[in-house]
Each structure stands twice: as C-alpha cells, then as structure tokens.
Image (cartoon, rainbow, N blue to C red; front, side):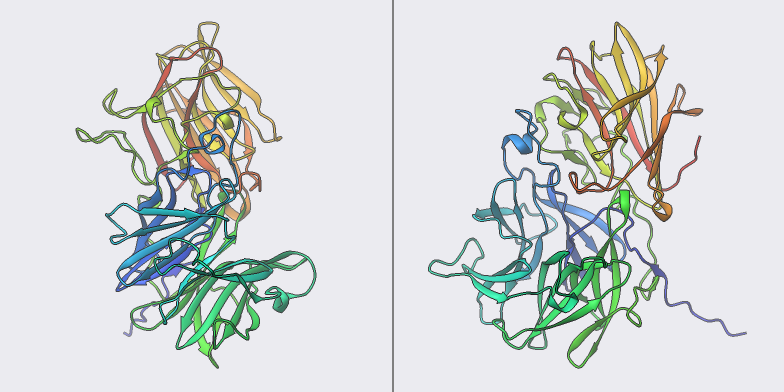
Length: 507
C-alpha cells in the first residue's frame, strides 16, 4: 500500500485576527513581522516565526508614542483610527530598523536595536509624517524613504536613518502609481514596500479602483530613479498590501492582508514564482486556500492568550498579548496590589466608555472566539461601571454598575452608533462572571454577551451585537477589561482572570 504525503498543510488566512499593514523580514532562519495598532499602547508590535505560519509576540517598538492629550485620552481628546500607522521593518549591517509615522503628532519615527527580541528600541523622530513610507537601504550605502499616495516620492535619509539628509530634496518617483489598475477614482496607490532582487527594484503598492476590489500593483525598475514599469500583481478576494519574503530554501511568498469585517484586517500568504524577472503572485492568479507550509498551531498563546494575573515577585508587567486603549495612567492599575488579580482604579470622572482610560485589550480572533472574566465588585463606588468589552466604535459591554447602593449586571450596546443600556439584572453577590462570544464565520460579525453567578451556568443578557468594521476606529474588535467612574473617584475593580478560547458555546 502506498501512502500519499500531504504537503499542503497551512491554510489562509495564516492569522485570523487583526494584523494589518504587515512588514516582514527574514534574518537567517527566523522571520520577523511588524504591524499597525494605531491608538494602542504599547505600540508597533513585533512578531516572530520560524515557519511563516506560527507567530508569537516578541515586543513593541515603543511603550509610549508621545504624551499628548489625544494619545492620553485627556481633555476630552482621543486618537481613534490614527496614532501610528503602517510600519517598515528592515535589518541592515547588524541593526534592526522599524519605522512608522503618525498623523496625531505629524512625525515620522525611526526605531533601532541590535537585538530585536531582547534589547530596547532607540527612538528618533522628525517631521513631517511621511505617509505609508518604505525604508530602503541601497547597495551603495544610501538610505531612502519611498512614500505617498498615487504620486509616490523619494527622500534620502542620513546614513543611520535618523533624519532627512541635509541638503536633499524630495523627488517624484512615480507620477501615478495607480495607473496599472485603472485611471479613475478609488483609493490611490499607497502602502509602499520596496525590495531589491537580483539587481532589480520592485515596489509593491495597494490600490482600490472605483467599483473594484483592493488590488496589488507592482512596479519594476533597473535603477531606483526609474524609469518604472507597472502591472497588476494580484486582484483576488481583495487580498492586497504587503510585500515579498523568501525562505532559506529559495521559495518566495507575498505577505498581504484582507479586510474581513469586524475581526479586522487578516494576513494571507500567497506563493510567488518568477517569470521574466517579474514576481507572479498566486496560483493561476488566485489566492490559494492551502499552502505548502507547516500547519498552524492556533493563535493561542502566540497572538492572544489567557491571563490568570498571577505574577512572580517583582513582576508588575502585563504580557505582550495585551495593549492598553491609548496611553494608560500607570498609577491607576496594578497586578500586585492583590495577588492574582488585575486591579483597575478610578482617578477621574468619565462620561463614556471610549474616553475612559486604562481599558486593557486583546484582539478577537476568528472564525470564532470567546473571552471571559471573573470580577470582584466589592470596592466599586457609586456610579462606577466595570466589566468586559468588545471595543470598536459600535461597541458592546457587559459589566457591573453600582447605582443607589446596589449592584446591577448591565449589557450596553452601541450597535446603533450610540450607547444604549439594553438590559440590567440585580446582582446580590460580590463576584460576577462575564463572557463575550464572537462569531466571524462568513462575516457574520455577531457577538453575544453572558453572565454567570457561579462561572458554570451562563445566561445570555441583552441583545446580539452586530460588529461592523468602522473607519473611525480603523481596527478589528477587541476584548477589553474596563472600569470607570461617573460620580466619584477612588473605587476599584478586581479582575481574577481573562480567559480566551477559539470557540463559542452559545449559552
């Protein structure tokens, strides 16, 4: 009897979670990837893989992008959908570089380190914010940024990439980079990523022709300054924006992402072959469902993970899978005040969930996922509201409110665009168990909220939440733990754990 080996074991998407604007490099046998998390803190996540499929968090380029009202959620300001955008990741002569730009501050940021997994990043910044730029080290030692939308430009940097080279002026690289995908309307070519392969330059961009789908456009040149010739690289399923990566054994892939509703923008890998010095993406022009790469072991615990909030003595950090919604106030949270608990304290009066500080978040994951927590409400003060969220513009909450000396389990939906209390149930004990379940299969994008009095028997509360991907937040839905005051400060909520699974039970 002859057994057939099954070579194709990986499946697209390779990460069913919000990891947009990927930039990727290979150093030896190890791959590194950066992505966009905008208004989250810490930001500019760095991930690592040994096989292009199974990724884990290894760090962030910054703890705090800047301390300004919009990033701090102070003075009524926020920076949802802004913060830091698409990054560029490079390795050059023993140094790792990751760059980004921020409309919030009007700056371009360059971060460097010798050890991408262990050393802190050194930061440099300068104006202006070069939109969707690609950092590029040429063979002659010169350093450039390629940036812009539609009309793409080139600017030269200092040798250490710390700023614009004195005396240099920007050049127009390509007058209309959108042209290969059509002439009129839509999203102009952006998301530049530049590569040099066998002496030729290849520039990847994304366009979105009016009435069409997101499209990969590739330009090729023998010299950086051109002339450039362009063609459509891929037009299938709206999978676009990214670049090239090769394996140690000589295979090539394009890493790209797809807009997939409420879960966010999710990464795909597409095999690449070379024909006539052009990279040819896909299988007969299509994005394959399977790939000749190792199977995924799942996104837990590499991209998201449960947390019992138990820490070794002296460890006061939160694991890398967590990010705060905007910059936190570090005086108002703790994992050491009460052993085995996350404590979120109130320090000011807030009028809305989206303007409250210190919401601790993780990505939701597809095709379905569940997040749950146990909340001790003994020390909430009058007007406090604490619990579990699904964060986006049209958010949903299940939590405990203290009103008139009593506790109530409450479900709030902002599905209409404005928050509405849909249901409340009296709570006669100090602990509430809360759960949110998300269904992203076939873009169903629906969540349900639950509560329990014993952590075993669950009751659905309120109404299903539709989870649209909205541009004002520009991010997939996130689980979040929150606590904010509406009447007086000084209360606190203790979260015993956060547990995430890749399935829903529905009860």
